[in-house]
Length: 243
Image 1 (spheres, rainbow, N blue to C red):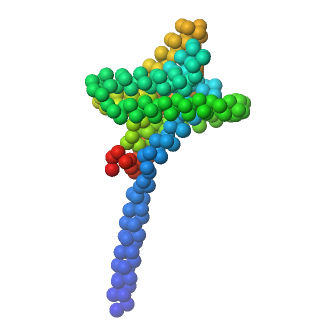
Image 2 (cartoon, one colour):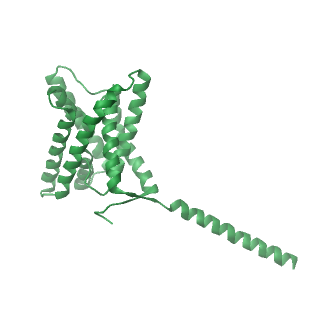
Image 3 (cartoon, rainbow, N blue to C red):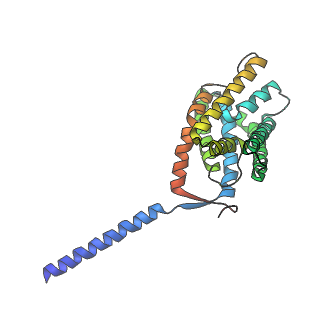
């Protein structure tokens, strides 16, 4: 009888352990649900802050904003934010030409881009008040790199029309079938080349580009992919457009 009771106790203990392990496995697989509308608003705010912080760090502006920045330096009476949504309008038009059709959601993307440009001008009002010591500038670059990577990864998953500078590489990857990371890096490098040529030829010297710009251009595509895979494991994104 003693051995039977001991065996029963062992079996029950094993069952309890299995249940606990299974429950732990299930809890680990449970994802947090995020509303895409809020995600997009958050992404616009942190992306625009990332752009301004990277420029303020002195390491150069982010690749996605380098072309508008170059135009704002050549034509200083027009703000960076204004040139940003003008450039984004051109990207939206290019996508429609590549698609060979009118895509209504792209127009909403332009509206998001307009808000993004206004946010850039807003951040430009307070960021210059931050300390400018070299140690702070390094911190600004690291923060800006992380903000932009997270913002783009969130935008790509929010199932809503997103900022045109984020939309363009995503849609181009879909149109061409080329991996997003490759398209993103190529797009960034082309933006940097245009900026270098524009400022170099008109201003007489290259402006807005630095070591941080180059590092971001060649690595951010991969960083966005890593952040995106982590987000996919932890969160479900729910939109009113796609349920």
